[in-house]
Image 1 (cartoon, helix red, strand yellow):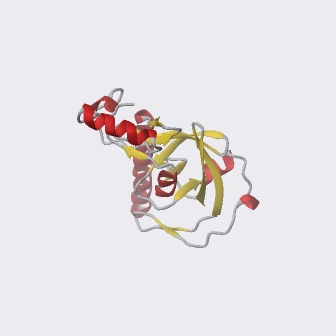
Image 2 (cartoon, helix red, strand yellow; image 1 turned 135 degrees about the horizontal axis):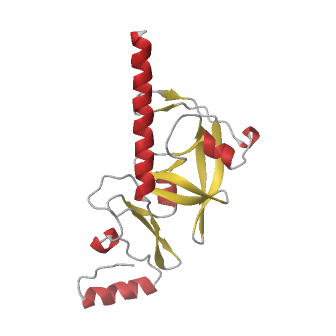
Length: 194
């Protein structure tokens, strides 16, 4: 854990406040960049324990208001259609494409000793990611995230815990998305020429 204190007086005040049950201070410093490839523009992609399984390629998206699970992961977790509850509101992608969710399911996400129940919207659409975690999970865990530092930090039992992103996985996901888009554009061009 790296916490920078302004002075020993501030440190003493913070220690007293912490002993009274306040949460530890969470932040990022240059030390948190050690082990990352810099500079970068990588998304924050992590592995999380969802529904009792370690799930790779989970995108952390602070800009999203809901957690999303893609159908391949849903099936991979051995969940059945009858496990879903109704979710009638369509989702709209950045490209303006409307996706009708298959439904919703509540599953636990475990990080260390902390468990947060999350409502995932299950969709049958292509994504290089298996799932997206968003503000509801981030807020429930009191998480602070940094794409620059490729980390999530959250308070747990009086300490600051970390989840480290995987830049190689983030880059694989980006390449897969670009490759799929290029293939789709090539197919559309060929059909147009016929």
